[in-house]
Length: 113
Length: 113
Image (cartoon, each protein chain N blue to C red):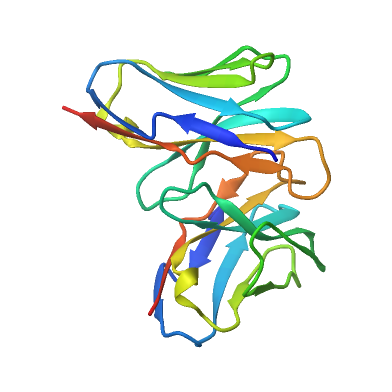
């Protein structure tokens, strides 16, 4: 069964600090991996997408990495801001017919001043 | 462009009542889908559509119906609401299929008493 596990479930960081979120997956055959940001009371918004051949992808202060061999991804937030307080969801897409997406449970990040 | 819109934003139902959650997109996307999001769980796919006139079941379809008469609209019907359907519902769309970036609506928060 395809699975996506995210850790930690939640974390609190001080404004200006960095943090790293983890995503481990067992989805096969792998197509791509996305990170979404979901603000409270809003729908998820795509941050990055990575395919099998990509190791790193940046979007402003967000940097995602992918190790397809170990089936792990991370999302690094640099110099956190209050607006980074949100849930971050890892989504892995499989090359298969029908329902291809597997969602992680998300990591809730709270940035404190 | 308004993107993906959903109505209502919030709804309270009594057990056994029926209702329709509306979803519309103005991006000419072929693929549309409905998810539910429950605390501590990842987004789960209810139904999806790859184009007008075509719908299919996702991971948790029981108790829900959909139709896709136009490219723009993808309503979700609750046939006989149950407390287990208390959740936040998100509609999403993408250009061709779910492996592409999905654009999510703002969500409908449903409470079934």
